[in-house]
Length: 331
Image (tube, rainbow, N blue to C red; front, side, top):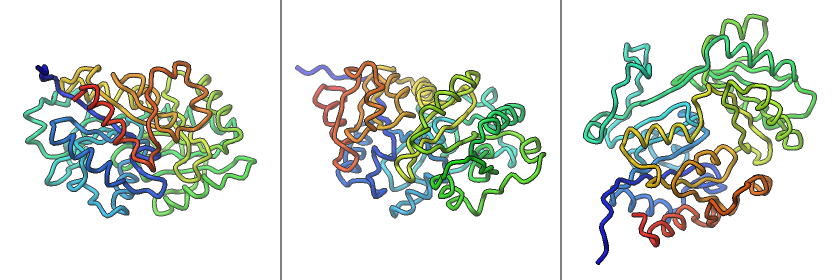
């Protein structure tokens, strides 16, 4: 006789290089697998380095609505954990301090299962760098002559200022400036950074040849912040190095959300393919890595036995992970 498992479950998937194929689509099989999880009561979470704006742009290009009424997802962890949003079937409302609705963590009401099911979609949590932190990190980036962007706090993350000053040819950085041309302004006077205020993050983009060495250097120099690296979603080679508030990472966001939903750590499964996923996969009770995970990252993983490798993003690795979990009675 099979013993029924009444514990709540959570399944988290990264997007670029994991759920998204190389041509930025979602395989039909993966879509159906996520739908089945919802039917079983499993909480489905997308965890991405993309900002909320970038995520919405991506799903709209696929033909979905920006508010995810037609996507099999319950929560979105975006900007590598700087923000968490809850989706509902009807509409999405952003808690905006400009409208008098505070998202200050100390004032946020603890959410429970019944409230979540009936509440409108909203940003549940967000983190920013303080003004002094922004200036400090910017000064350090300037000392290294790096190309970087400073993004405004959530929900205004698309708006940014940038400085392009490195000696190397940085096509990936130029491509990102072009993508955000309607939102970004070049740093052209001394007070630009000083007057900027709070920020979601500072992002520097470094060519692949120097990327990991620079990332290691920044990580060592800025231990008071969260320094996260990722492979560029644009050229697939350059290294993006993001500096956030110390409280920001995918694992911290997942841990917080699981706690609010009363889901045990061992009942959380996660899948990803890049550097900014590893802490999340380490935290989860079950971690899966894609076959298309960068070779250098696989070499850096000390305990390769901790993660189960599944098919690539183009070959429905997400569905393979879900099938694996079902075979071992996770659901």
